[in-house]
Amino acid sequence: MTSSLPSKSLPSKSRAITVAGLWGALVTAVLAVVPLALRDRLPDPLATHWSGGSLPDGNASFAGSLAFVLIFWGATWAALLGAALHGAILRGRLSRVHWWGLLFGGAVFTLGMHGVTLAANLDAATWREALLPGWQIVAVLAASAGAGVLAGYLGRGGPDVAPARSRETPVMRLRPGQRAVWVSRVSNPWLAGLTTVSLLSAAVVCGFAAMGMVGASAAWMSLAVAVPLTLLGLATATVQVRTDAEGLRVGFGPWGRPARRTPIGAIESAWAERLTPAEVGGWGVRGIPGTGRTTLMLRGGDHLVVRRTGGGEFAVSADDAERGAALLNAYIAETTGS
Amino acid sequence: MLLTLDLNDPRPLHEQVAGAIRRAIADGSYTPGDRLPPARDLADALGINANTVLRALRELRDEGLLEFRRGRGVSVLSRPDARAVLVEAARELLAEADRYGYGPEEVIHIIRELS
Image 1: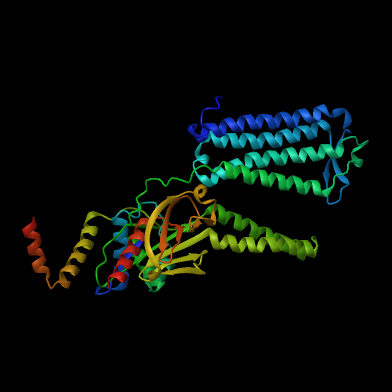
Image 2 (image 1 turned 135 degrees about the vertical axis):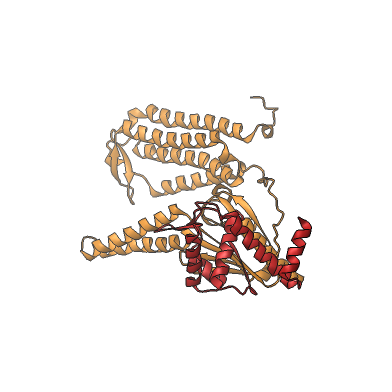
């Protein structure tokens, strides 16, 4: 590769694939060569698991632990390469950050974990004598997080170019003596399914606890996870969006309660946008720092976006969002006009 | 779903709601197979009784526009025929003419002039 070629002239996709290929191969080589070179000084089986203290409580054969590490890294590497080849993931800035962060943070994590395992086992007579100080785990976690954040920062690329979407605000005509409302309801069946599963698991745990098959503390702990998860899932798996003369109302959950209202006087303008979970950082309530926008993402597709008079934008998944936005704009014009 | 009600419309409320839903299907914002928002959502939004909305939905089902399915709610079965859409549009035209002080005879006269 010629060094005179500025790296910017390479398209980000082919650069990412080149870097991921070379880096992944290097990591794989280190993961395989180092244990093989140290094989004479390692016990077989190796200590591979520590719980809490520095004394090991689990072991695996030399070949088994090597295969596990290689498969773990290989799967991560293959998934990242596949995502880069597919190309879509590198288009958004946020997903680029995640991709680069995982490529380097994941590699440092795998290398570090494998490294401290080997270091603990090195020159131990049997696997039971392999001591692993806890701070080493903390150091590996910190180093991989640091590497991930740094790689994500360096690989973030330019800001997202907004696609040529018409930011023109749709309008419609209202006649005097007419009352118009627009309603839309969107559900995410996956979230609803997860909610059902967590609800069922809570019920099963309660049943077992009632029969005395599970300890009370275990039952409480699983309920402490399942109940908030169920409530959160119920509230965000379905949203009901309504626009009318009073403004925008977003109702959460199957009953549309609680609801979040934005009065018409607090809305500057409204429009529809097509958004995907990758663009906003996932599902649920999402806010990317610096964009001044909060998104309630239930599924990729049409979203109703309002800009508040005090600044800031709010987007919510809604079918047929353009009509809802047009109605809001009509009412805004009516409020400010008269 | 965008629904508009005319506050001066003398027709019973359930007929107006049926007309509003018919218009929403006719203008293509809902196509066959699409699910309508629940009747309760529509009733809340319009500030009317849920039974009024249900009555309107049943009327549209009897016209063959909507389909009620257990567990799947109400979905659009077919688009309204041209005549029903025209009747709805003519009703609006007459209402608008009335606001400017024109009677039905004068509207008919205007239509004759245009055609």
